[in-house]
Every structure is written in C-alpha cells, then in structure tokens.
Amino acid sequence: MRLLAVLLLWVFSVSASSAQENSDAKPFNVLFLISDDLTSTALSCYGNQICQTPNIDALAARGTRFTRAYCQGTYCGPSRASFMSGYYPHATGVMGYTNPRPILGDRATWSQHFKNNGYYSARVSKIYHMGVPGGVQLGGDGRDHDSYNGADDALSWTERFNTPGPEWMAAGIGETLEGNPDGKKPAVGGNTFVVVEADGDDDVHADGKAAVKAIELIKAHKDKPFWLGVGFVRPHVPFVAPKKYYEPFLPYDKLELPPKIEGDWDDIPKPGINYKTSLNMKMDIRRQKKALGGYYASVAYMDAQVGRVLKALEEAGIADQTIVIFTSDHGYHLGEHDFWAKVSLLDESSQVPLIISVPGKKPAVCHSLVELLDLFPTTASLCGLEVPERIQGKDISSLLDDPEQSVRDAAFSTAPMRKGLLLRTDQYSFIQYGEDAKNGIELYDVKSDPGQYTNLAEKADFAPVVENFRKQMQAKLVEMRSHDLK
Image (cartoon, rainbow, N blue to C red; front, side):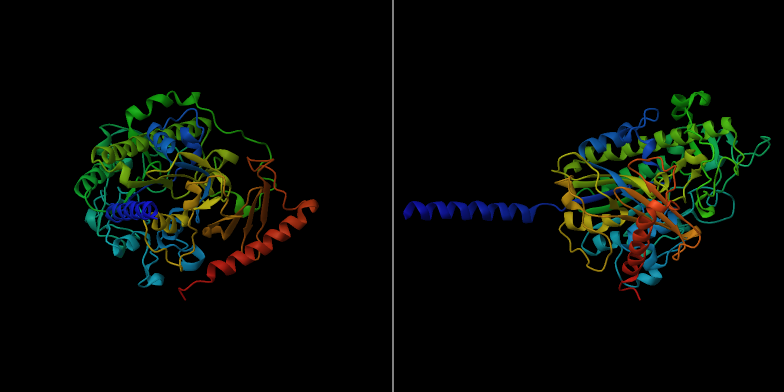
C-alpha cells in the first residue's frame, strides 16, 4: 500500500508539474503570409520545374502542404472578406470590393478575435482588398499614403501599415503587353498586363518594403503573442520586380505555354469564357511568353521576401512559437484554355496554394478538400482560443496530425461578376451560372480530365450527376445563408 501511495504521489506531482509548464507556456503566434493572384502551379513545391521558390519550398518541407485548397471567391474582394470575416460571400453579401463590417456589426473578424484575446494584431500591406499599393498613392493625387486603406477594416487591427511602391512607374525596362499590338502604348496602370524589369534593389518596391516592416514588427513584439498578417502584392499585375529576378527566364521565347486545343471553347457556356483571353488582350505568342516570364519573375521576387520574414522569426528566437500560414487569395490562369488572370472557376483560378506550419507537427502533404474559410477556426483551435460557433469554416487542425483524413465532401467557390458557383468534389468540378443555372453549366471529371477540357454537362449519361449537383448547390446556398447576420 505504501508503495502504491508513493507511486500515486509521484504521478500526481508529474502531472501537476506538466500542467504548470503548459499553463506557463507562451501562446502560439500566428504569422499569416498571403500572396496576391498566385497560382500554386507557379511554385516549385507544387511541381513547377522552371520557377524556383526555395523559401516557400522550405516552409512546405516543415509544414503541411495542401494540394486541394480552394478560395471562396475568385477575385480579391470577396475572397479576402470571406476568410477574414469567417463567412461565405453569400452570407455577408460582399461580392465586390467592399468591407464586411457593416453586416458584421460587433462580431469579431479573424485577427480581431485574436486581438480581443490579448494578441497584438497588425497587418502590413494588403490583407483585405485595397488597390495595388502604388499609382493612387504615388500618382500625384495628393492622398496620404497611410490613409489609403481600400476596403480594410480598422477594428481588425491594433496597428496597420501600408507599403506603397512605384509599380508600373518604376525605373527600368517596361512594356505593356495587353491591348498594345502595335507597341505604341507606354507602361500603364490599372489591372493591365505590364512587365517592368526594374532598376534598384528589393526594397524599392512594395513587397520589399512589406518585408522590412514585418521584420521590424517581429523584433518589436517577439515577447508577447501576435497575429501578424503580411500581404505581398506580387505577382498581381503589373509584373514588377528587380532585374535580377528576370534572369532565369530570359530569353522569354524559351518559355513554354500551355497547350492550345482547337475548339477548346466550343462546349463552354458564354459566362465560362474568361474575361481576359489571349484574343481579347491582343497578345501574340511573344507577348504571352513575356507575360509568363514577368509573372514568374514576380513570384521569385515575392518568394525572396517570404524568406526574409521567415529568417526574422528564426533570428528573433520565436520560430518554435509561431504558426506560419502561406496562401493566396485565389489562383490565376497562365494561358490554360488561352485564359489569363483570375475570375474563372476552373481549378487554375479557384484552387490556391496553402501551407500551414505548426511547431511540433510533422511535415506532410494533405489531399483533403479544404477552404480558406477554415483558417479562422483552425488557428483559434490551435492557439487554445474559443472557436466561435457562428463562423462558417471548419476546424481542420486534425489534418495536421493525420493528413489522410477528409473533412469535406466538396469545396465551394464563387465568381460573382458572372454569377458563377462552383462545387469541387474528389471526382468532379461542377460549375453553374446563376442560381437557376439558366446561363449554363459545366461538369468535368477531374480524375480522367484534370485539365478540364471536356464539359460533360450536356451528355445524357451524366444527366443524373448534373441533377444531383444542382440539388447539392441549392442546399449549399441555403446553408450559406443560414447565419446570424440577418
């Protein structure tokens, strides 16, 4: 009995000591790194053989790399408002470039939830939608750089910082590729395909400035928990990067474009033809290849800035206390189907890179369908915070321990400007235009047709599949609108 008592006392003392250590442990920080207009196919850790991204690759090597993560809106505004608010676009009504706060009321956003729980919460550059940080700020209209916050939400942050750069006005060799068949148009702003092989070093430009500010904040706040969002604007157009990042892709004519399939658009409904194509942008093969090279150079430049921020975590001694997430607001077409840019609901535009690195978790690759909406509840759970029942994402933290699990039957995305709706399952990509689908339907068997070239929606053999998806879509719309925001 005495031996048993001694044993029980030892077990109790060890348990108490362990509990004390856990209670005294510093909470995880969250470092959220988000690129703009980045397709996973441009990253070497996702298989690209031409564009090398060693810093993002290193993060993937120690974290969980998700191969089937989907955004909830295929352009910036609705996507960013969704993952920051914790609600689908159909819940908040943010289908464009507005802030979700008017509908959220006093409900906390993702970073605000951490702020309310004692975290320092800050953003550097673009987290919610804002204009590419140049042009408006540097274009001589008299605006104060710090006051140009776009659709940002002030309540989400303890502090916020903008990092304007020269963008298309950068010194260097610039060319407008879009709508410029005679070559007479100078480098211009807006959502236009412009390549600038820029003079100067990394810190002349927006993403270099963002890295500098992020490093400063990491050093200043390393002794208390933080939620830090760092928005990199590359590879969003204009494709601006220091000249050294272009060198691996020169000459441009050595780059290979995706295959061009005759009659590729014949079975695609009109709303499914993307808003930017080689045809309507008047980009010949030379310009298309230069656009690809400019995009890759911008990705390489952005990757270098990611590396600088991750190095700062190591140097501050807090890498083992920090959850790091890397993703993009949506994907991007680089000539597939002769499409360019975003908005489409095909995989190139709706699927995003997603890497989550959590101290103590083993590296893995996960093929489960997940959504960007899942980041809010997942990080709250990992940091020991309450996960608000009202938000519409899923806690996917279990996938970090067992990547063979599956947490979703389907991922949802939307392209509001064409009333497009996507349900992406393990086998199929189902797209309808309009809630009644009167403007067309696309159905692709992504297992046998990963390039999504053959639309099966009008084939009689697939009528039951289409009908089943239409019912699922209606149920999803009801689910998304069943919220507490009314």
